[in-house]
Image (cartoon, rainbow, N blue to C red):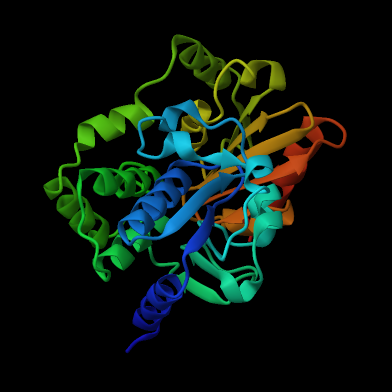
Length: 327
């Protein structure tokens, strides 16, 4: 038995031996976070288990309303009234990224982490971690295949949503042949790829489209176009949902000749959320970790407190990226 099969076996045993689960994910939950948490909750229900999905974020992102179980997600204050036998933490490399929901976690012996990011902290004794996977939803697909639960359209749609989100509609460098195999199988269970893609990527409000245009019109370029930065102040960000603006991260790296794209936005007047995209030469996970975040080599993010002007943070990040470009 290889180490990944052992991780699947151990994870299934962990779930079999427990009943009432807390399910949570990272701050600023994205498509893979929503898909994997809600798919896990749906799967556990099919196994006859109880679970509660708790997010640090409040309110929930409207973009993901179409996903089964979206309306059942609760915030940390509501979750504090519950007692959990165990926790399943998804798509999170370290405890800090869980936010306030981390305070609800039971001891590590009763925690299972399922993730595809490089491991940064051991806050769970049980781990299903594969950095070669495109998404956490891929890992949920694999573990469901090893269980007694049969796929249906609802479960398949939840998993497909995270898969298509984290691969950028199968265009990012993390896309592998396995992703296409899984996608084909999920469509056989009734997933409608065009409908999911439309919901996730092509269903923005008029106001959101105007803000995207504002961001593109004010994009800045550094180091002869090798670094391109889109920045949105809080008064602009407040006019749209956070998730609706995520595509600007990919636009920032779409400039011909660019090496790295940054999408920076003030999310509450006190914090910056920063998304990093790399064409290959720069390890943006390494850069993001310098600012309290993390992720993957080609896609990462962080959230940092505004101390001084946003331009100060921007130029510090540009300087960190330049160190890799100059080597």
